[in-house]
Image (cartoon, rainbow, N blue to C red):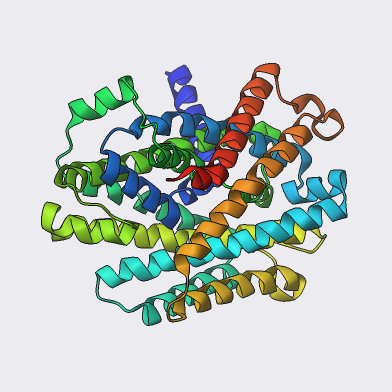
Length: 417
């Protein structure tokens, strides 16, 4: 009886520790499913049906490997990735990397506000109301809140993304076809098909994620004794990310694809679902897009402010007061304001902004990942916690594949007929 009581007490203690540590992995993974990601998955489902669901498996592996290395490096060093790049690569190299990342993330944040505007238009709310209100709410949360409060809200946002499961189920998916597409993967070898595969895998991992993951681990004050729980948090986050992506593809494949309906963005998917799966399915899909967009509109500029300030030695962190981290809060506010203003401009070139931000992400991602894997293998920095040979093999393989995908994404347009 006493042994049983001890076991239960120990188990409850471990569960309590896990919930205390819960956050960085799930939040970082969930932000993957932003407006751009939802658009990519929606278009893939509408065009190819269930045919490209298999791509989520390599996406999961890459996401898991990269986030684990980030978390371990943050826990061991107590420093952000930007800090470590500056210390080991020098200020000049750091400056050019982060100027590129800053412009890319302004474009990415603009895309998120486009998602807010599009999703609210499904409910009949003008962008001139939804975007300013969303921007103000996001600003208040970060500037007037603290990390603990913000993290809990972010976790609620993460759970809210599971509304896509409801939307998919209302489309009455064909599970036998889904299983067949996973067991027997096929790919359209046309330029359009290859670009779609690159888009699905590429949307899973972005440069800013590496900086946010490492900074949030430090902000939470995690230590190596917490590593096992942190790893569970990362795995749960990666699984949740892929599950949401899976059901977005299924929702659009089960309704739009079977009816031959093509779309250009996630808002189109929400509108097209109405006559096919009912008004509720349409609204649930739009609500998911809104949550994902406002969630990412919070995290993206936050991550950008974190790593730019870290790179150049300024104070950063949402637990700090404005006067203690002026540069951090000013940069965060500036990115939000610029992105919101761009969305509110009549005839703003949103497609071009989204395209060029993705191109910049594609160019910068391999640079960031190479810096990261070199740092995580540096014994002076990591001590005994450097990568194991198998992790290095998988890590470098993932980087080579990502570089190949980035290059292919850039040169594909030149081969279009």
